Image 1 (cartoon, rainbow, N blue to C red):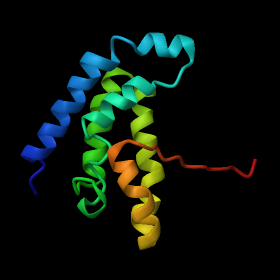
Image 2 (cartoon, helix red, strand yellow; image 1 turned 90 degrees about the horizontal axis):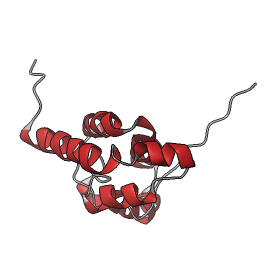
Image 3 (cartoon, rainbow, N blue to C red; image 1 turned 180 degrees about the horizontal axis):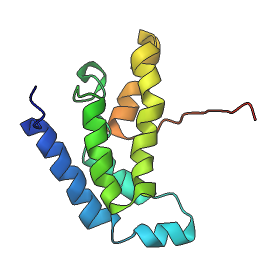
Image 4 (tube, one colour; image 1 turned 60 degrees about the vertical axis):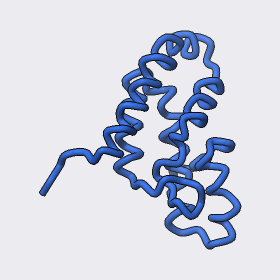
Length: 128
């Protein structure tokens, strides 16, 4: 079994690392201290087309998988795990639509999620 990354996966890894180094790391402490959501960083990720890496091409993504999501999340987390969560949690909220949504739901939500125009959320409760 070949565990090496494809050229596309390497490009995703490099792009996410570049965003982490240049855009996230310099401002991470400031966002943490102010307890603010990093909308400017989310916009940068959207402009880099990173939100669509795991969304099927049919809905505006690049057709990657959970592996591409994990690669990007790992690299973004190098800059700041909290800010990377803005990306990763959107994936958590998007995958139920990809896996179980009907065509109407997929057509309604996935293009905006792939472009980064909207973010997804995932609600979870515990019995206690």
